[in-house]
Length: 325
Ligand code: FAQ
Image (cartoon, rainbow, N blue to C red; front, side, top):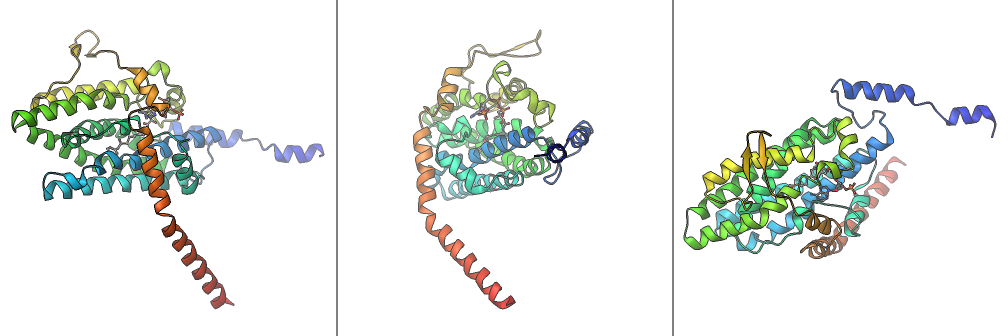
């Protein structure tokens, strides 16, 4: 190959990089057709697809209670909530697709066990009070984490977050209301609510990710204005929201060290069990295998729908071709 050819191939991207940096600095949005650094594209695909997978796998713990919800009204509400989570998964997969990955690739990564999804969905839901604790704590943590993502620099992700956060707020309130109703009930119901809060409190704090000094992606994602706050900052903000709400509910947050510190202007709390978190990330949590197997089965059971849709599309295309000819 001659020297001039090489020069053409090695296109200098300095101007594109400068335009991208200027957009980020000016708080403007990056859109799918804009030039972006390969690493920015890669980290967005990573985060958005993980987020989408979380919503899809996140349907399972609550799906487990749809047929057993204590009244028709509770059943209808829970069913609507689980459907919302499916919708969130689909928006997020669509947002990721704008970056050049296909839905099939993402699904394949998930069912092969190669993709991450939120640690929180690897815990069991043995009682009805778990539906309350998930709404209050899990959706509560999701809102806390996701409201700043509405300002994420990548347009399709930020815009998807706006609608998702509105729906998550509604979910959080329905969870709070389930717990409030149980806390106003019999001693056994109050005990069931407290037990669910005890089991979901620490895992909900882990949703924000590892501590800042062990978060390899944070610095770059913050520089790119995908993340606006660190994992620990958001975790603190969440605990600050929970404390007064726990008072209203009459539940105790299961951390004996939890108290306000006037010096640091934040809550002191016990150390999170990060071993448990990393075990779950490694696929060894209480429900990892069940969640993945269930998702795999659903995918296999749906094969005939995909085949029928592909065949229909093939016939339509053949018909159009014939009509044109
Ligand atoms: N679980 O360097 P960082 C919901 C991974 S949706 C599993 O700090 P980053 C709605 C992380 O991916 C819940 N993995 O990473 C709902 C990275 O691995 P990688 C989901 C985790 O990206 C409610 C490694 O650890 N929400 O709940 C977790 O800067 C009810 C190092 O971590 C989102 O996904 C974890 N908890 O920050 C649905 C929000 N934490 O990729 C149904 C969007 C960290 O290098 C029912 N995502 N990892 O191999 C984010 O905001 C961020 O991705 C973080 C992690 C904050 C999760």
